[in-house]
Length: 171
Image (cartoon, rainbow, N blue to C red; front, top):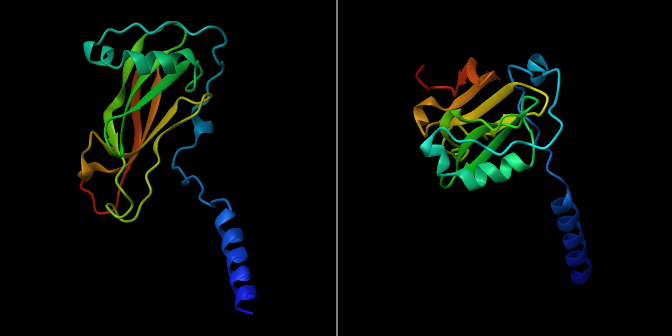
């Protein structure tokens, strides 16, 4: 009898642990569809050309990302790399010209949910067919500025469309 109960408990544990996570994307204030691009670059991406000596320090990771082709705003590639535990840095590469830009933030920290009101930050969120770049976390590692920032990237410029700071954060 004890064997049967143990087997049943193990079966139940296996079934519940094998279920996929039900976690979904947050309900963003601005939708990707609001910033759609008309065309997506098709062809061999240009090699990155660096005008910033600081970004040249990351040329390997930026070049590897650029070789994969556009993943953002039709003809751009967002290259991401870690900058420590719970931190990401970025650059944006034009697949047609190879021009490299720094992103709207130098670094983005993603605090643990227990650190900031139990919120799960998503980091950098973008889509191939949209100019919308969502920066969800703490820009430039400033914990007092954690929240969700919505940028439109167009012609090499990131324009802040909206920011929603985490509750209790100064503006």
